Image (cartoon, one colour):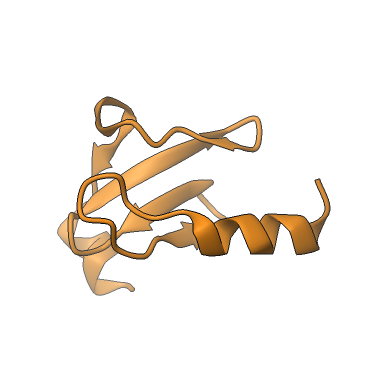
Length: 65
C-alpha cells in the first residue's frame, strides 16, 4: 500500500470504543486512543481494532504525547 493510501485510510479509522481519533506511533507500530488510554497494534500493516487486542498505555506514554 502506498503512503498516500495509508494516510487516507488513517483518516477513516476511529477508536472502536469512544469513536475518537487515533494517533499512529511508528516506533511501536500502534494506533493510540489517548482518551481511552489504549494502544491498538498494527500487525502486517493491518490494524487490530478489537478491544481485546488493545493494551493499556502507561502514564509516561500519555504524558509524552
